[in-house]
Length: 414
Image (cartoon, rainbow, N blue to C red; front, side, top):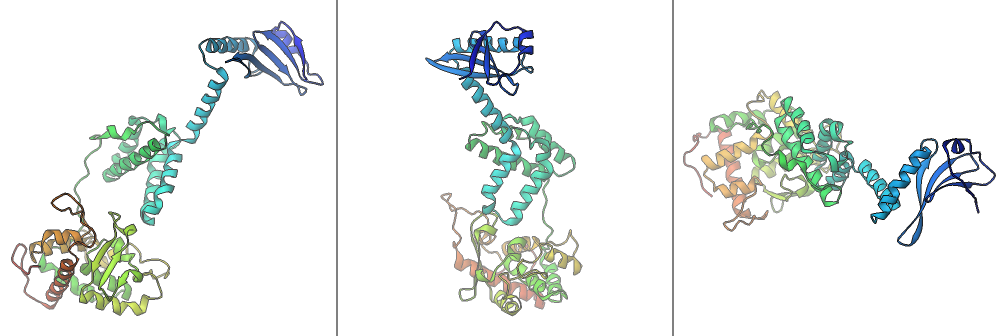
């Protein structure tokens, strides 16, 4: 047992106190004492009773904490005890809170959120999210405790992005930050989402359309250029199928042979590749099947219908279609990979006069019935299959020199 030394402490006595073979205590009264260790340490301690239990509180080490400082801490502790507050537990809680603030920074929470959700996204989208956060958000508020971040701080981040002309990105970052804050709230690491107060604070996103050839008289030239493409056979087939499928470029280039059912004449795109995260069915026209079967002997050793020229383990580059269009002489303001969607939507509606809901279903847009319920992926599948064949035959006719029907004039119906 350490020996007890009762003493009325002074600054000089504390300063000149020497260590002994065993630790000992110098008492100052009111439960305050100095613990002197064999190694020369001088540690302030406060002994007190709370709820009928004797407790011990650490106040710090001398000389960082002077005798006067220790006495002040004793007075503060006594006031808390009289008020029904245990100073030791309060200190522990404050320490835990400080650790939480350090650990629960915006960046740490964002990375945790990203890790939990990335399997629900395409790899490209997951990578794009983390790049945006690392470039524009983490450098500014990444090390800030997420509980303490204010709306003005988020606005400052977004206005910096907006100032360089990236208005759409600023809106996307706002949405991302909102998701991260809501994740923090759900895990009890934040109390509010400061992005909810930012409505109307950013410039509106300018309307932008992907370049597309939608005039019927201009389509034959595009189709003939594709048939005459002198690049790789894989890219040529992708170009030929793009107008027949009218899916997004990412969905096209990630197509896998396992998803193609020649017997049923269907291509089923998994939910993970779709923007709305719902699997999507593309009926295959006779022309599409012919192109796919001509390509199969060349790429069947890969899981991908359109593998990369460098590796069968990867899909075709996201720039392959765009680069091919430029190589064929179509400028960036004339035609894009997304333009095949706009082309099909316009012609199917305004020339071929297909029912709009059939078109919207085939574009994988959210279409609801009169009761507000979302249709499932197989809705109107027979009609859509017929539509896809009508569309493929129409394109063949244009390419062969059939009379072009201008927009908003009669045509076939489904």
